[in-house]
Length: 150
Image (cartoon, rainbow, N blue to C red; front, side):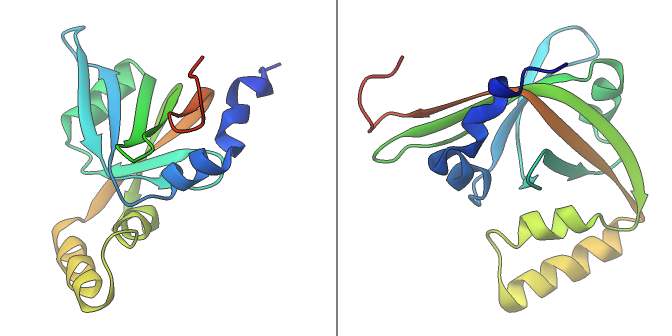
């Protein structure tokens, strides 16, 4: 049985703020050569998992199929600085067309006519997308303005 307390920090108000922020997260995964990679990614928090959408041919898709353990960092410089660290497993599903999570993630930072233009461009570009769902198994939230950090 999984240790649910390992992800309790995801319910902290500051953690939820970061999970819904428009800023990118940093995804860490193991590349095909065995070396770690860290890349910025747009994402959507669906209430239980982080969803990242990309082209099925993206290098991270093939790497995650081989090594699904990942880490994710979402932060803000503040003040006060805040950071959410996650570790978990990634699963991949290729979907026809544009994944709705991709558009929802884009809507966090783009609005109105600009969002409509992004959607039109993305729909014209992608015949299918890889939906990467990251299920957290561990999380820590740090609010550097709330006192000493453990």
